[in-house]
Image 1: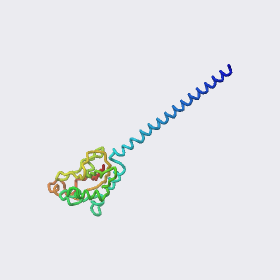
Image 2: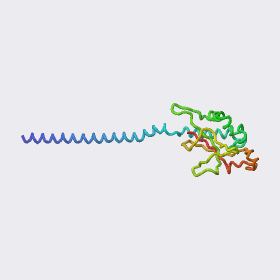
Image 3: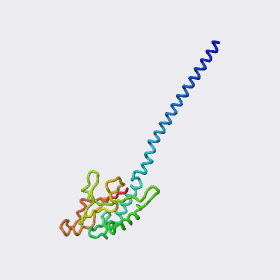
Image 4: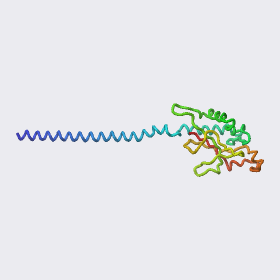
Length: 205
């Protein structure tokens, strides 16, 4: 009788031991799955939504660079690379074509520089082009566009209000003086807008 009782007690201990071991294993497996799930949520989900929320990605940077290159190639004076043809008093000359007639030349620029591309996720991007005096850039490399003699900014396209945007820059000069300003004695036969140079800035968002 004593032998059987001891044998049953030993069997009971083994069963209880096996039960406790199984519980520990379940706990460890459960914690592991929980940690993996949490890491997945924190690592994947924010990136999924960011691709829709962030207005700037690699596509916009490529487009901005291509657009800046197109403007320099198409509006530079023959034989003078990065010297843009410009006349503030004649909107049919050079870079000022982007302003007059409203929209038409700018739309041509958008089409020919392959900016007007759409996908299932995105509409046509916003585009802003401005010319600034490099000597007026602040620490953040921001500046207001140059104003011509009529007080009009050398800025074209969509309004830019310091929002997040892909940016491409080119160092340029303006070839034509502002005849009206020269007549008033404000400038002396040479272009004083770019001192020592100007920046052509293209922003896309």
